[in-house]
Amino acid sequence: MKMSQAVEQSLVVLVMLALQKDDLPVKSYLLSDRLEVSESYLKKTMRKLVVAGIVEAIASKEGGFKLARSIADITLLDVYEAIEGDGSFIHATQLADRIFLNQESNKPVEDVQEALDVAVDDVLSVFNDAEQDFKQRLQRYTIAKLLRHVSAADFEKIDWRQVN
Amino acid sequence: MKMSQAVEQSLVVLVMLALQKDDLPVKSYLLSDRLEVSESYLKKTMRKLVVAGIVEAIASKEGGFKLARSIADITLLDVYEAIEGDGSFIHATQLADRIFLNQESNKPVEDVQEALDVAVDDVLSVFNDAEQDFKQRLQRYTIAKLLRHVSAADFEKIDWRQVN
DNA sequence: TATCTATGGATATATTATATACACGGATAG
DNA sequence: CTATCCGTGTATATAATATATCCATAGATA
Image (cartoon, rainbow over all chains, first blue to last red; front, side, top):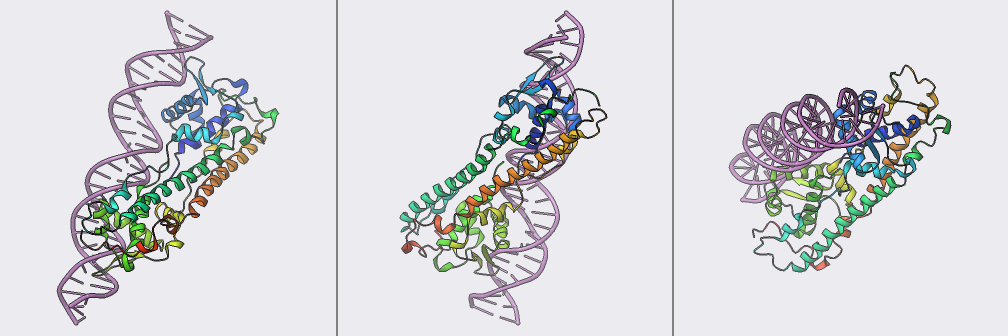
Protein backbone atom coordinates (compact mmCIF):
# COMPACT_ATOMS: atom_id res chain seq x y z
CA MET A 1 0.00 0.00 0.00
CA LYS A 2 1.89 3.01 -1.25
CA MET A 3 1.08 6.66 -1.59
CA SER A 4 1.37 8.39 -4.96
CA GLN A 5 4.52 10.46 -5.40
CA ALA A 6 2.19 13.19 -6.60
CA VAL A 7 1.35 13.89 -2.95
CA GLU A 8 4.94 14.76 -2.11
CA GLN A 9 5.21 16.71 -5.35
CA SER A 10 2.13 18.71 -4.44
CA LEU A 11 3.46 19.53 -0.99
CA VAL A 12 6.72 20.82 -2.42
CA VAL A 13 4.87 22.95 -4.98
CA LEU A 14 2.63 24.39 -2.28
CA VAL A 15 5.70 25.35 -0.26
CA MET A 16 7.12 27.14 -3.29
CA LEU A 17 3.85 28.99 -3.90
CA ALA A 18 3.70 29.92 -0.22
CA LEU A 19 7.14 31.53 -0.43
CA GLN A 20 6.46 33.30 -3.73
CA LYS A 21 6.90 37.07 -3.52
CA ASP A 22 3.67 39.08 -3.65
CA ASP A 23 1.66 35.89 -4.20
CA LEU A 24 2.24 36.21 -7.95
CA PRO A 25 1.23 33.25 -10.14
CA VAL A 26 4.01 30.80 -11.07
CA LYS A 27 3.95 29.03 -14.43
CA SER A 28 3.94 25.25 -14.61
CA TYR A 29 7.20 24.99 -16.54
CA LEU A 30 9.00 27.03 -13.89
CA LEU A 31 7.85 24.55 -11.27
CA SER A 32 8.61 21.44 -13.33
CA ASP A 33 12.00 22.71 -14.49
CA ARG A 34 13.11 23.45 -10.96
CA LEU A 35 11.80 20.19 -9.52
CA GLU A 36 13.09 18.26 -12.54
CA VAL A 37 9.80 16.47 -13.12
CA SER A 38 7.56 16.09 -16.15
CA GLU A 39 5.66 19.30 -16.88
CA SER A 40 2.64 17.44 -18.30
CA TYR A 41 2.26 15.26 -15.23
CA LEU A 42 2.79 18.18 -12.90
CA LYS A 43 0.02 20.08 -14.68
CA LYS A 44 -2.37 17.16 -14.21
CA THR A 45 -1.42 17.02 -10.54
CA MET A 46 -1.90 20.77 -10.20
CA ARG A 47 -5.32 20.44 -11.78
CA LYS A 48 -6.37 18.22 -8.88
CA LEU A 49 -5.27 20.89 -6.43
CA VAL A 50 -7.31 23.44 -8.40
CA VAL A 51 -10.43 21.26 -8.29
CA ALA A 52 -9.88 20.83 -4.54
CA GLY A 53 -9.82 24.60 -4.13
CA ILE A 54 -6.26 24.62 -2.82
CA VAL A 55 -4.64 26.54 -5.65
CA GLU A 56 -5.99 28.91 -8.25
CA ALA A 57 -5.13 28.60 -11.94
CA ILE A 58 -4.81 31.61 -14.21
CA ALA A 59 -4.83 30.70 -17.91
CA SER A 60 -3.32 33.73 -19.47
CA LYS A 61 -0.08 35.39 -20.40
CA GLU A 62 1.62 36.14 -17.12
CA GLY A 63 -0.63 33.47 -15.64
CA GLY A 64 0.20 30.34 -13.70
CA PHE A 65 -0.70 28.89 -10.30
CA LYS A 66 -1.09 30.63 -6.97
CA LEU A 67 -2.49 29.63 -3.60
CA ALA A 68 -6.26 29.85 -3.37
CA ARG A 69 -6.34 30.21 0.40
CA SER A 70 -4.18 30.77 3.45
CA ILE A 71 -1.50 28.22 4.24
CA ALA A 72 -3.03 28.04 7.73
CA ASP A 73 -6.14 26.59 6.05
CA ILE A 74 -4.39 23.91 4.02
CA THR A 75 -3.90 20.66 5.92
CA LEU A 76 -1.86 17.64 4.87
CA LEU A 77 -5.18 15.81 4.65
CA ASP A 78 -6.50 18.38 2.16
CA VAL A 79 -3.50 17.73 -0.07
CA TYR A 80 -3.65 13.98 0.40
CA GLU A 81 -7.34 13.79 -0.49
CA ALA A 82 -6.97 16.17 -3.41
CA ILE A 83 -4.53 13.70 -4.99
CA GLU A 84 -5.61 10.31 -3.71
CA GLY A 85 -9.34 10.95 -3.56
CA ASP A 86 -11.57 10.39 -0.55
CA GLY A 87 -12.12 6.68 -1.13
CA SER A 88 -11.36 3.95 1.38
CA PHE A 89 -8.15 1.91 1.64
CA ILE A 90 -10.26 -1.24 1.60
CA HIS A 91 -13.27 -1.84 -0.56
CA ALA A 92 -15.62 -4.54 0.56
CA THR A 93 -16.00 -7.50 -1.75
CA GLN A 94 -18.46 -10.17 -0.73
CA LEU A 95 -15.70 -12.73 -0.35
CA ALA A 96 -16.79 -13.90 3.08
CA ASP A 97 -20.29 -14.64 1.79
CA ARG A 98 -18.86 -17.48 -0.25
CA ILE A 99 -17.60 -19.37 2.78
CA PHE A 100 -20.90 -21.13 3.21
CA LEU A 101 -22.13 -20.81 -0.34
CA ASN A 102 -23.13 -23.84 -2.42
CA GLN A 103 -22.80 -26.19 0.48
CA GLU A 104 -24.87 -29.35 0.42
CA SER A 105 -23.82 -30.89 3.68
CA ASN A 106 -22.56 -29.04 6.75
CA LYS A 107 -26.00 -27.62 7.35
CA PRO A 108 -25.84 -27.07 11.10
CA VAL A 109 -23.80 -23.92 10.76
CA GLU A 110 -26.46 -21.28 10.27
CA ASP A 111 -25.65 -19.58 13.56
CA VAL A 112 -21.96 -19.64 12.60
CA GLN A 113 -22.85 -17.86 9.39
CA GLU A 114 -24.63 -15.17 11.37
CA ALA A 115 -21.60 -14.77 13.61
CA LEU A 116 -19.40 -14.40 10.54
CA ASP A 117 -21.60 -11.64 9.16
CA VAL A 118 -20.85 -9.74 12.35
CA ALA A 119 -17.15 -10.52 11.93
CA VAL A 120 -17.14 -9.09 8.40
CA ASP A 121 -18.75 -5.89 9.63
CA ASP A 122 -16.14 -5.80 12.41
CA VAL A 123 -13.21 -6.11 10.03
CA LEU A 124 -14.53 -3.36 7.82
CA SER A 125 -15.14 -1.02 10.73
CA VAL A 126 -11.72 -1.71 12.27
CA PHE A 127 -9.98 -0.93 9.00
CA ASN A 128 -12.21 2.09 8.63
CA ASP A 129 -11.32 3.28 12.13
CA ALA A 130 -7.63 2.75 11.41
CA GLU A 131 -8.00 4.81 8.26
CA GLN A 132 -9.69 7.57 10.21
CA ASP A 133 -6.81 7.56 12.71
CA PHE A 134 -4.42 8.00 9.80
CA LYS A 135 -6.39 10.83 8.25
CA GLN A 136 -7.06 12.66 11.49
CA ARG A 137 -3.34 12.86 12.12
CA LEU A 138 -2.84 14.41 8.68
CA GLN A 139 -5.61 16.87 9.36
CA ARG A 140 -3.82 18.26 12.40
CA TYR A 141 -0.92 19.51 10.33
CA THR A 142 -1.06 22.55 8.06
CA ILE A 143 1.34 23.99 5.49
CA ALA A 144 1.73 26.97 7.80
CA LYS A 145 2.92 24.73 10.59
CA LEU A 146 5.35 23.09 8.20
CA LEU A 147 6.86 26.47 7.46
CA ARG A 148 6.98 27.66 11.06
CA HIS A 149 10.77 27.82 10.99
CA VAL A 150 10.80 30.21 8.07
CA SER A 151 11.15 33.68 9.55
CA ALA A 152 8.52 36.22 8.59
CA ALA A 153 11.25 38.28 6.99
CA ASP A 154 12.02 35.46 4.57
CA PHE A 155 8.50 35.17 3.24
CA GLU A 156 7.79 37.19 0.13
CA LYS A 157 11.49 37.41 -0.68
CA ILE A 158 11.68 34.80 -3.40
CA ASP A 159 10.47 35.19 -6.98
CA TRP A 160 10.52 31.84 -8.76
CA ARG A 161 9.73 33.60 -12.00
CA GLN A 162 13.16 35.15 -12.17
CA VAL A 163 15.42 33.13 -14.42
CA ASN A 164 18.30 31.77 -12.43
CA MET B 1 -3.82 4.31 -1.97
CA LYS B 2 -5.51 0.92 -1.85
CA MET B 3 -4.94 -2.25 0.09
CA SER B 4 -4.36 -5.52 -1.75
CA GLN B 5 -7.41 -7.79 -1.90
CA ALA B 6 -5.07 -10.51 -0.72
CA VAL B 7 -5.41 -9.07 2.80
CA GLU B 8 -9.15 -9.69 2.84
CA GLN B 9 -8.60 -13.09 1.22
CA SER B 10 -6.12 -13.99 3.95
CA LEU B 11 -8.50 -12.99 6.71
CA VAL B 12 -11.27 -15.13 5.29
CA VAL B 13 -8.93 -18.10 4.93
CA LEU B 14 -7.75 -17.69 8.51
CA VAL B 15 -11.35 -17.72 9.70
CA MET B 16 -11.94 -20.95 7.80
CA LEU B 17 -8.83 -22.53 9.29
CA ALA B 18 -9.88 -21.38 12.74
CA LEU B 19 -13.20 -23.15 12.38
CA GLN B 20 -11.72 -26.33 10.92
CA LYS B 21 -12.54 -29.43 12.93
CA ASP B 22 -9.62 -30.90 14.89
CA ASP B 23 -7.27 -28.33 13.36
CA LEU B 24 -6.71 -30.63 10.39
CA PRO B 25 -4.83 -29.21 7.39
CA VAL B 26 -6.98 -27.90 4.51
CA LYS B 27 -5.74 -28.16 0.93
CA SER B 28 -5.35 -25.07 -1.21
CA TYR B 29 -7.85 -26.16 -3.86
CA LEU B 30 -10.54 -26.62 -1.22
CA LEU B 31 -10.01 -23.05 -0.12
CA SER B 32 -9.83 -21.57 -3.63
CA ASP B 33 -12.80 -23.57 -4.91
CA ARG B 34 -15.00 -22.43 -2.06
CA LEU B 35 -13.91 -18.80 -2.23
CA GLU B 36 -14.03 -18.88 -6.03
CA VAL B 37 -10.57 -17.37 -6.42
CA SER B 38 -7.49 -18.43 -8.36
CA GLU B 39 -5.75 -21.36 -6.69
CA SER B 40 -2.30 -20.25 -7.88
CA TYR B 41 -2.69 -16.78 -6.48
CA LEU B 42 -4.15 -18.08 -3.24
CA LYS B 43 -1.14 -20.37 -2.83
CA LYS B 44 1.20 -17.43 -3.27
CA THR B 45 -0.78 -15.48 -0.71
CA MET B 46 -0.73 -18.42 1.69
CA ARG B 47 3.02 -18.67 1.28
CA LYS B 48 3.34 -15.16 2.71
CA LEU B 49 1.30 -16.23 5.73
CA VAL B 50 3.62 -19.22 6.15
CA VAL B 51 6.74 -17.04 6.02
CA ALA B 52 5.13 -14.74 8.59
CA GLY B 53 4.61 -17.72 10.89
CA ILE B 54 0.82 -17.36 10.86
CA VAL B 55 -0.01 -20.63 9.15
CA GLU B 56 1.83 -23.89 8.76
CA ALA B 57 2.17 -25.68 5.44
CA ILE B 58 2.27 -29.44 5.14
CA ALA B 59 3.49 -30.67 1.75
CA SER B 60 2.27 -34.20 1.63
CA LYS B 61 -0.69 -36.33 0.74
CA GLU B 62 -3.38 -35.40 3.24
CA GLY B 63 -1.44 -32.15 3.73
CA GLY B 64 -2.53 -28.56 3.34
CA PHE B 65 -2.56 -25.45 5.52
CA LYS B 66 -3.34 -25.10 9.22
CA LEU B 67 -2.95 -22.36 11.78
CA ALA B 68 0.55 -22.06 13.23
CA ARG B 69 -0.54 -20.35 16.43
CA SER B 70 -3.56 -19.41 18.50
CA ILE B 71 -6.12 -17.07 16.95
CA ALA B 72 -5.70 -14.95 20.08
CA ASP B 73 -2.12 -14.32 18.91
CA ILE B 74 -2.94 -13.30 15.35
CA THR B 75 -3.69 -9.60 14.97
CA LEU B 76 -5.05 -7.81 11.93
CA LEU B 77 -1.67 -6.06 11.78
CA ASP B 78 0.11 -9.43 11.58
CA VAL B 79 -2.01 -10.34 8.57
CA TYR B 80 -1.70 -6.91 6.97
CA GLU B 81 2.09 -6.90 7.28
CA ALA B 82 2.43 -10.49 6.13
CA ILE B 83 0.80 -9.48 2.84
CA GLU B 84 1.72 -5.83 2.37
CA GLY B 85 5.16 -5.95 3.94
CA ASP B 86 6.42 -3.67 6.69
CA GLY B 87 7.45 -0.83 4.40
CA SER B 88 6.21 2.73 4.68
CA PHE B 89 3.28 4.29 2.82
CA ILE B 90 5.57 7.09 1.73
CA HIS B 91 9.16 6.71 0.65
CA ALA B 92 11.30 9.79 0.77
CA THR B 93 12.61 11.07 -2.50
CA GLN B 94 14.89 14.09 -2.36
CA LEU B 95 12.39 16.19 -4.28
CA ALA B 96 12.49 19.09 -1.85
CA ASP B 97 16.25 19.34 -2.20
CA ARG B 98 15.79 20.55 -5.74
CA ILE B 99 13.85 23.64 -4.73
CA PHE B 100 17.01 25.65 -4.30
CA LEU B 101 19.22 23.61 -6.58
CA ASN B 102 21.09 25.18 -9.50
CA GLN B 103 20.11 28.67 -8.57
CA GLU B 104 22.38 31.47 -9.65
CA SER B 105 20.53 34.41 -8.20
CA ASN B 106 18.26 34.40 -5.14
CA LYS B 107 21.20 33.81 -2.90
CA PRO B 108 19.89 35.29 0.34
CA VAL B 109 17.76 32.25 1.08
CA GLU B 110 20.19 30.01 2.87
CA ASP B 111 18.28 30.24 6.12
CA VAL B 112 15.09 29.44 4.22
CA GLN B 113 16.73 26.32 2.90
CA GLU B 114 17.59 25.27 6.42
CA ALA B 115 14.00 25.82 7.48
CA LEU B 116 12.81 23.70 4.58
CA ASP B 117 15.05 20.84 5.61
CA VAL B 118 13.22 20.87 8.91
CA ALA B 119 9.90 20.98 7.05
CA VAL B 120 10.81 17.90 5.03
CA ASP B 121 11.68 16.00 8.19
CA ASP B 122 8.37 17.18 9.64
CA VAL B 123 6.33 15.92 6.70
CA LEU B 124 7.99 12.55 6.83
CA SER B 125 7.48 12.19 10.55
CA VAL B 126 3.84 13.29 10.38
CA PHE B 127 3.10 10.73 7.68
CA ASN B 128 5.04 8.20 9.70
CA ASP B 129 3.04 8.99 12.83
CA ALA B 130 -0.20 8.73 10.87
CA GLU B 131 0.89 5.35 9.59
CA GLN B 132 1.68 4.23 13.12
CA ASP B 133 -1.80 5.32 14.22
CA PHE B 134 -3.24 3.19 11.44
CA LYS B 135 -1.18 0.15 12.32
CA GLN B 136 -1.67 0.41 16.06
CA ARG B 137 -5.40 0.22 15.55
CA LEU B 138 -4.98 -2.94 13.50
CA GLN B 139 -2.79 -4.41 16.19
CA ARG B 140 -5.53 -4.12 18.79
CA TYR B 141 -7.76 -6.57 16.95
CA THR B 142 -7.19 -10.34 16.81
CA ILE B 143 -8.83 -13.11 14.82
CA ALA B 144 -10.16 -14.44 18.13
CA LYS B 145 -11.93 -11.17 18.80
CA LEU B 146 -13.37 -11.29 15.30
CA LEU B 147 -14.89 -14.67 16.06
CA ARG B 148 -16.17 -13.77 19.52
CA HIS B 149 -19.77 -14.30 18.40
CA VAL B 150 -19.10 -17.87 17.33
CA SER B 151 -20.20 -20.05 20.23
CA ALA B 152 -17.65 -22.46 21.63
CA ALA B 153 -19.93 -25.30 20.61
CA ASP B 154 -19.70 -24.26 16.97
CA PHE B 155 -15.93 -24.40 16.83
CA GLU B 156 -14.50 -27.69 15.63
CA LYS B 157 -17.77 -28.62 13.99
CA ILE B 158 -16.92 -27.89 10.39
CA ASP B 159 -14.75 -30.01 8.12
CA TRP B 160 -13.95 -28.14 4.93
CA ARG B 161 -12.38 -31.28 3.53
CA GLN B 162 -15.73 -33.00 3.17
CA VAL B 163 -17.03 -32.63 -0.35
CA ASN B 164 -20.24 -30.70 -0.34
C1' DT C 1 -6.91 41.22 -30.75
C1' DA C 2 -2.56 38.79 -30.23
C1' DT C 3 -0.31 36.09 -27.00
C1' DC C 4 0.58 32.77 -23.75
C1' DT C 5 -1.48 30.04 -20.31
C1' DA C 6 -4.10 26.04 -18.27
C1' DT C 7 -7.30 22.45 -19.83
C1' DG C 8 -8.89 18.11 -21.74
C1' DG C 9 -8.43 14.12 -24.57
C1' DA C 10 -5.89 10.60 -26.61
C1' DT C 11 -2.24 7.77 -26.18
C1' DA C 12 2.20 5.62 -24.59
C1' DT C 13 5.14 3.51 -21.11
C1' DA C 14 6.36 1.67 -16.35
C1' DT C 15 5.07 -0.52 -12.42
C1' DT C 16 2.42 -3.35 -9.73
C1' DA C 17 -1.42 -6.65 -8.75
C1' DT C 18 -3.52 -10.61 -10.13
C1' DA C 19 -3.55 -14.96 -12.56
C1' DT C 20 -1.83 -19.32 -14.91
C1' DA C 21 1.16 -23.29 -15.87
C1' DC C 22 4.51 -26.54 -14.63
C1' DA C 23 8.68 -28.87 -12.96
C1' DC C 24 10.55 -29.90 -8.51
C1' DG C 25 11.32 -31.46 -3.78
C1' DG C 26 9.36 -33.14 0.38
C1' DA C 27 6.42 -35.57 3.65
C1' DT C 28 3.61 -39.35 4.65
C1' DA C 29 0.17 -43.07 3.96
C1' DG C 30 0.23 -47.54 2.73
C1' DC D 1 10.27 -48.42 0.74
C1' DT D 2 7.82 -46.18 -2.51
C1' DA D 3 3.96 -44.23 -4.83
C1' DT D 4 1.21 -40.39 -4.17
C1' DC D 5 -0.02 -35.79 -3.82
C1' DC D 6 0.96 -31.70 -1.56
C1' DG D 7 3.28 -26.93 -1.22
C1' DT D 8 7.31 -24.39 -3.38
C1' DG D 9 9.72 -21.81 -6.81
C1' DT D 10 10.17 -20.02 -11.37
C1' DA D 11 8.70 -18.20 -15.47
C1' DT D 12 5.28 -16.03 -17.84
C1' DA D 13 0.74 -13.75 -19.03
C1' DT D 14 -2.86 -10.41 -18.24
C1' DA D 15 -5.22 -6.42 -15.86
C1' DA D 16 -5.12 -2.34 -13.52
C1' DT D 17 -3.01 1.72 -12.24
C1' DA D 18 0.64 5.38 -12.05
C1' DT D 19 3.43 8.13 -14.62
C1' DA D 20 4.52 10.55 -18.84
C1' DT D 21 3.96 12.79 -23.55
C1' DC D 22 1.67 15.27 -27.22
C1' DC D 23 -1.53 18.36 -29.14
C1' DA D 24 -5.73 20.86 -30.12
C1' DT D 25 -8.69 24.00 -27.66
C1' DA D 26 -10.53 27.43 -24.55
C1' DG D 27 -9.72 31.31 -21.62
C1' DA D 28 -7.77 35.51 -19.61
C1' DT D 29 -5.31 39.71 -20.06
C1' DA D 30 -1.71 42.77 -21.64
